[in-house]
Length: 484
Picture 1 (cartoon, rainbow, N blue to C red):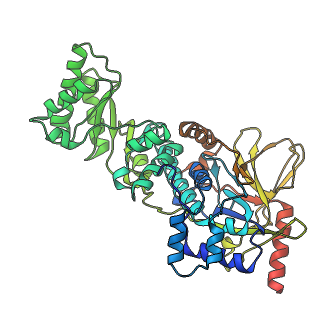
Picture 2: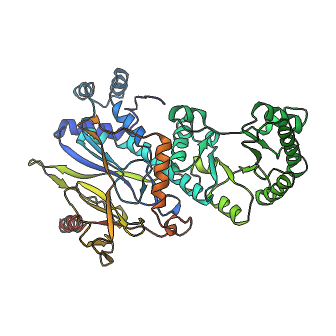
Picture 3: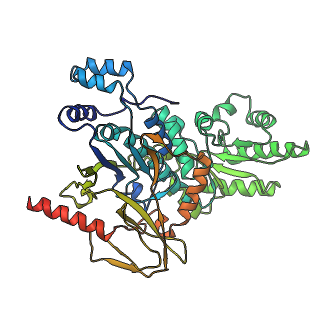
């Protein structure tokens, strides 16, 4: 997974279209494609952008090797002149993107590609594969962490992920979304994120008795002593044996810096409350009670509401697979073609479904914040040449129901442009932050959302509006299409 050539990580039709452009169009014709998504995962109120670092690596490594070209030649559908062209192929265009960890909303471009049409076409599949997956898992992680109300969430899903890449890059995305660490050691090595874990039931079962297993583990890892207490009987055996070991550690002068128990089965609310009382009565009020066992945001929320005495959570299958919403739904659509005069000609895709009608032109995005609170008011998609004065009134309207309008008085709001340049002329001009720094940024991003937008069920919608100029262009193109 490190420095792979993923050039053939593409759908065949990208290559057949490339050959068609090569033979029947100007191969250097510059176009704009937008990658965006249409609806928030898990019926939520937002998503988290992730995967940009891997997108950058993919673009940097983009080239057709001799083996790649030999394979394509063997398919029998590509002509030799096109295959010869591929020998010197590289990306020479521009890419703009929303930074990883940013809160994002439907229909706004997460990535914008400005490049010769053959290059822009080829990169579609890989961009969507990378951005869709990591944004999905980062979003799911943000929901799980929100449900825990500040408790630590550990990503434990590697063995249930759909393969090594999904397990490793999914763990990376989960940390961006808010997890404090992962059990995935390869992810820890590649991305310098904390790795965490305890032991399995097999550890307990391999010893003559539970106490010996606990004591041996505590002797080896006294500063990270979390004991799994549900192998035989949680309350009659597991917790009492854990308390016995903790007492012996204290009597031996071993500092109890990070210690406690983990529950992995049974009624977690009931068992955690009973275990908490037992630990407190024994003189260990600061012992951690962690839990795992097919957790998701709704179960964690329910356990919190039941007063479960759990402050640390290990979440696996439901997080790493985003089990209730297994796809992000990002798409990649043509937005403009450069004319002979060097200006971009807006393009639009129509559909009987209004949600699938695209926004044309060379665009950027401004986030609109309420100045008094710093909370997100709306996002504004506009043309790149447009400018706005925060001292002047700002008119926002719903592009699908334009009679719904909001006029923000001048001085009552602030603006931040979201998209940043990542590649210029084929050269990378952006350095990705470390994953833990992206995580910190993501936490700040989520704090700009209203609680009503973050809630798990029926969240308040943040509107993504069009500028008046972009809206007029869209309506004009729609009218032309309808007349044609």
